[in-house]
Image (cartoon, rainbow, N blue to C red; front, side, top):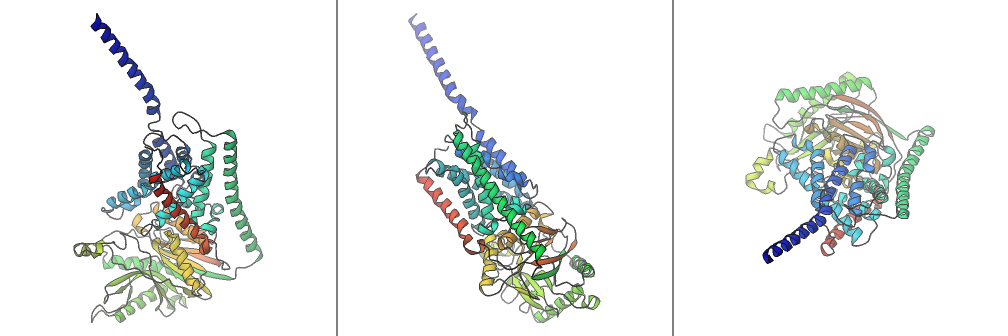
Length: 565
């Protein structure tokens, strides 16, 4: 009997322990995947908002679920791990085109997405540090950290400027005008301030998040969201209205008529035959002749990056192939392109080509301007090279690897910005992804104008044929649009496979070429009165400060940790 009583007591005790354990684990299991679902919601909405899908209004609310996670005093189970997974999926989807040029870039695609996916958990972690340890209001912490991390991403190593939050607004000129103050980073800050305000105003109290806000606080944050939206769109409407009035009442003090030529040749990493090179060249000549028939009074013709197969040589290859011989080939090619005997007076021709210096074993990705005599009068060598596309850091210094990578990339970086003088209009050329890096274009224009060379128009020559008409074209186009607004200068794009364009100084798309089709765009560029935007002056220091503040808070979080799992 005594043994039976002991067994019954032991059984009751075990049952009580099971019930207690079940009661404790029930709420935990309910909130086990809440961070995952909320992160998936945020990044799916953001993917829809970005260039290629173009639902730009979604960008203003996409980050609200992540704001709920940040604002909640009780972090969900395994918070940062669950934020990282959707961030990785987002960047894999955004950058799917990276894998297209060659099979080895499948590894590069995943490596780049893995690197960028770190910024999602960092955003949540550092924001929570500010909110819950340093008691910074969520509406301040969230935009400061997000903008700071974006600045770090665009500047770290050589920087990666595609897919910034501000690019979601590239088809909404009224929302882009604040970029004149602090660059595209100002748009990112405004969007995140709005999302943070909405997030706090709509936060809720439930067992999975335990994030509640008082009614007065909700009202204040709702008002902040409205003020942010009214300020951004109100300022943009005012600037566009002022420009519309100016266009009605006054003529532009300068005009430039430009034929932008768009080829359509998918770029494949294998040697081309002489017949292929000649066919592609003649196709560009035909497009140029067509443009000259459409418009008799052109001031400039622009060809895409790498489109002119007869590059510039700075030294002799050998006794037979001298730089004089190459210059003669260049002249014949220029003559075939511009055809002065058929159309009368020749027109300056700006082409994407290459420059070689066999003596010093160097080469440059170049933009060459041919004058009316068929001679290269200005040569711009690309300054900002694409890592693993145009140069291989460290690897190029390893003898065994050097010969292998030479087949993929042999470019050296140029060191100077250049100005092209066409009548009374000054043009600054840039090449390919240089326009994805805002601080580079800012430095380029400032360096030229500091030396007394005022710039009126920007021209980007690019070869986006590597990406077969995918959303990379839209992402690059968004970068070009933001650079025009930041500098308050018209920007012309001549792109192989698209998207060629004429973008005015307010980011409006005056003309846009088709995707993966040949085209010639006749652009009558209205040159505005030169102005120096705040971003070109001291405005660039603001995102710089936010970036370093984010780094400092992140380091401080190591010593003042947030109770995240």
